[in-house]
Amino acid sequence: DVQMTQSPSTLSASIGDRVTITCRASQSIGRWLAWFQQKPGRAPQIIVYKASSLESGVPSRFSGTGFGTEFILTISSLQPDDLATYYCQQYNGDSWTFGQGTKVEIK
Amino acid sequence: QVQLIQSGAEVRKPGASVKVSCKVSGYTLTELSIHWVRQTPRQGLEWMGRFYPEDGQAIFAQKFQGRVTLTADTSTDTAYMQLSGLTSDDTALYYCATDFFCDTVRCYHYWGQGTLLTVSS
Image (cartoon, rainbow over all chains, first blue to last red; front, side, top):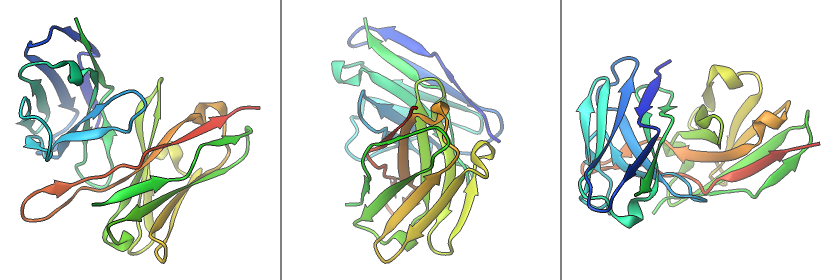
């Protein structure tokens, strides 16, 4: 099974800061990587798929990069609405695996 | 617009079983595969299994093999997840989600709203 290691587990930043979250796969998954945002009491919402494709309606301050085993989610200018937990997910093949999550807090 | 509407919260005693439904609208179930994921504060998001309504086949995470049954009623576009031998560790929020499917422009992916299962004596 592919293991996903996400870091950091918690991130505290100020409004306007550039924020990056990293996800590493235990083996190559090509571009089959998605990023989700989850707010309390809500289902996860997809923000990036296929490593770098921005989901329709997601603000352009979000971007994803990476290929193979290392992936990065960047928020170019953190906004109050970005307070949430972020998860990476690999979907290479028949099964999925999720990262442990990164809780983004506003400093 | 595709929507996945799940059944309501459930409470079960240890040792019992539960069956959660996931009704798909805006698409035909046989054109999708449905994944089931659960979420707990301790384990985070855990993939449980995947069901292919077109041929009725399913695959499971090893952790849930033998305890989870995935089915569907294609006449109502509803998928089901049954979990047996419940323990308090199965207390969680259970989600259904579509696989990623794409057209020439973009890909699509949808989640249900979640079903809370509480296992308690």
